[in-house]
Image 1 (cartoon, rainbow, N blue to C red):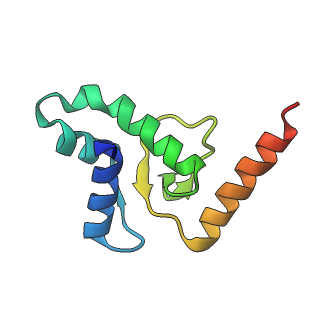
Image 2: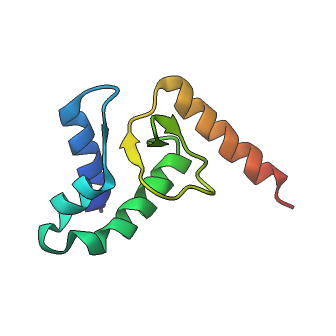
Amino acid sequence: MSDPIEDTIYEKLAALGPGKSIEPADVAKAVQPEQWQRMLPRVRTTALGLMRQGRLMITKKGKPVDPSSFKGVIRLRLPTAGESEQLIQARTATSDDVY
């Protein structure tokens, strides 16, 4: 079963092309136009999950954010191959540190 938020994120990014980013509000408006503000927390949560999997980048002022402590205005974009690898390694290192 696919997630409509995840699907919409990837559809919008694919339409823009490589290196381009979108606002979470764009996704929320596409998923639920009449009550898009209510969708924003779910869009951000989905984006965070995708970032932790190395499948999406969350940026602020063009720079990747720390997934454990970001807030404010963000944008979503596809990661480069190197960024995906770094995200996965960071996640593995974090989970190895937990006792």
